[in-house]
View 1: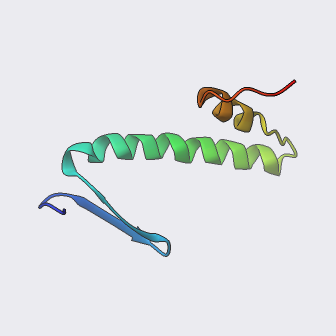
View 2: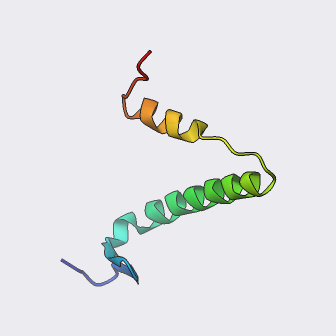
Length: 67
């Protein structure tokens, strides 16, 4: 359901509706994600490549590495 004031975003992969009361939080989270991606890409361009973020993401989700 779309209500007046909701934010509608779309691109080649789909469309999303963000309820007005959640829009500011979603925007702030998007800025954090954008900044993290920029930092990662800049590191890769300098030849610093790490997949530590994968381990951190999996650990945060409760997965543990097998010995």
